[in-house]
Amino acid sequence: MRVLATDLKRRLQAARVLVVGDAMLDRYLFGDVERISPEAPVPVVRVRREEERLGGAANVALNVKALGPAVTLITAVGNDEPARRLESLLQACAVESLLGRDPKLYTCVKLRVIGRSQQLVRVDFENQPDHEVLSGLLSDFIRIVPRCDAVLFSDYGKGGLTHIPKMIEIARGAGKPVLVDPKGGDYGRYAGATVITPNRSELAQVIGAWQSEEQLLERVQRLRREQRLAALLLTRSEEGMSLFDDEGHVRIDAQAREVFDVTGAGDTVIGTLAALLAAGLTLREAMPIANRAGGIVVGKFGTATVSYEELFA
Image (cartoon, rainbow, N blue to C red; front, side):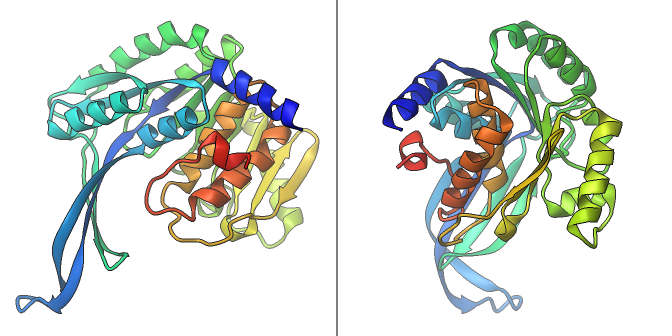
């Protein structure tokens, strides 16, 4: 087993993953709540500490990097202070980034106010990127795909993946496995992908609420055929995961020992899958390891990652 783990670590470190999608800057204000505001019935937070982390597709890229592969992130940002902070954090984490800058775009920021270890409010700053910026990113994508071992699309519905059907076609034409974390009700945008990883509510938007496992299997397999998907991995929170592919359906239970914060858990799952597929594992081999990674990360606060050592301890 130790030899196998050593070989996997070597293969992970030799792999390269391309991540494309909506990057964000996660900001946290930590403080104490000692009174209610006299202006409105809301708590007053006395801020003691501030923290910034990579969010969205940037957090996905960081999760891939934490397991060993080299990572390139392609994303659209504004020409603003959050974009500069995002770029600085990516550089500090050794994540190569190609940032399409649009002066009309607000780099997406999620500001969370935390009082006594409890999230009190989240404030989002965002708008949609300009089409011309996305066109420029498409040329970068075409240039980089041939030297990557897997391509991962992180769709947060912020407008950064306008060209995803064309990108999937290019990546699959180059023989690369394509993973998609989907958003919205139009899965036709992801046609031809190797695997998509919706959660329960996201999948229900597309196939409707299911009443039994048999009905779920029937609807998912129909969706796979219609959209030419090699597989669909359903993340089911406390119920674990289900993988649907040409061999049928396999399900594994959740492994979380303690759930502290589910923020970014989906990023960890798909990032782990991408790293393992890039290292040569199959989806069925990678699935239980990704499930383990998700179980570890929900025991951490906020957007977080899982190291190779944690995963295989």
